[in-house]
Image (cartoon, rainbow, N blue to C red; front, side, top):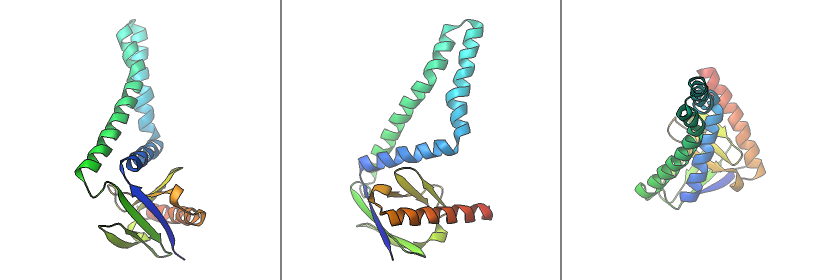
Length: 169
């Protein structure tokens, strides 16, 4: 029995999915987050306290806040640029059909079918499934448009695919 879901690919939806994907990446690479947002500013603050230098203390305390604000602007700019430069991407409805052996995605411009073996990883967050056929390509499946059976099916596929790919590496 095929399962179906849709993703309406507009600026708002892409921005939400991009933020969710970046948050999942931060969870995967928590050590990098720890280094950038805690260790480096902490070193500046401690250095400023030891040298009695108020500017180092201020720089260390404000750096994480500044980085978060810059990060938000970069996400907004990146998604806005993607939608403006790729006219086919804006206001595009992608329809997914998941079968037991393969899945299909269709849009007004493209239709394709693929086996699950073409997916090297599936990442899940509380609102989305991200199917990754390559390191730079992501198919976005919002959970809000999925039936509970499809969510269970994709979780099962996620476990199966991610475990098999780890064994291959």
